[in-house]
Image (tube, rainbow, N blue to C red; front, side):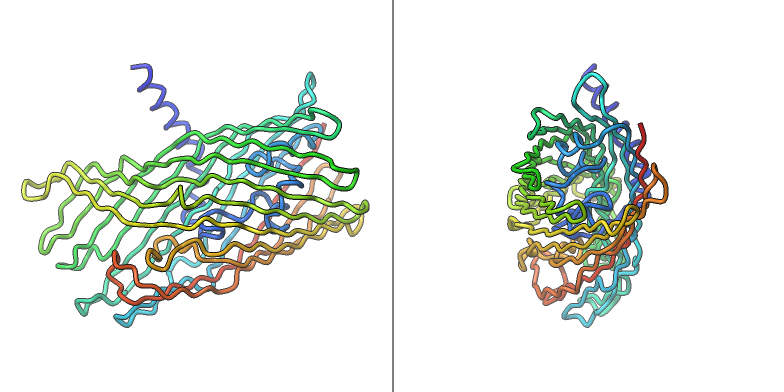
Length: 423
């Protein structure tokens, strides 16, 4: 009884914390796989080269050791708006259609403060980790008709982090929190004889864990490292519909197993040759091969005695591990203005044989630039752009009804953050 109550309470807490984020952020289109390249405006505008730089509340989700750099109190409210320039599906049935959802807003924030009795800074933050999705309308089918397909998959986190200055050179930190994911998916649900499906409202919540360090190799050079544990995300509590010829069967209990956020290991350097310049570098290994091997859909409790009592369907994913390279630059132009630029590269982790428009995680190159303006001793606004040039993948996924197909993706992000620092 107690265990069941605790699980229910944790699930409700996670859903409550994620409600605002997911209202704004589903779907969040993929960048490094389905992860965003960074978190918080400074991290994003430096191309995600953040592990040795992390120095604001977003360090909770990048490198919690960086929290030790924050003295006093700090609040950061950050957001992004994605403009999908080209998220398109084409196939051998003559379709060539752009996703109808062209704009996606994202949001998050954090509050941290230094502790009086310890050389530590602690706080809480909420983050959209990433996701994928698109709504494709009027797709030609193999039955000479037209139908729609769509997917909305997103992940949000809430975390409590602490970073401590252990020695003059070394800081250590850790973050614990909850990861919440939700999925909706539909494929040709209005076409008789094709076997259209619809999965709705399947979600899950699980604890997450991250540790990090920053070490000053010299007065101008800092080493950073962070480890993120894999989080399994079984998605349960959904409903499922199956179009079987002239009938549609509804199942009240549907779950999707096989999704997980990957294990990650990040290392980086930050070099500050003088007071005005900061150069940063990061390598991030993302263990997609263990996180996304295959998915299994299970549906029970049909609304008809003529329907199968249980449906089970598995799909291979077989994602490859990804090594992400990030480079970042910051230049303090004057006491009020800081300029940023960055570059991020991660090879597409999706094999051609399991490529799907439902998770368009094929973007590879990311270019960023922006600026921060300090308009009072306490308040700073940071804003800028991230551009990901078009990637085209030709594929034939035998588990999908498209035959020879092509997926294209190109994206432009507007990133911004409002920050306050005070004692």
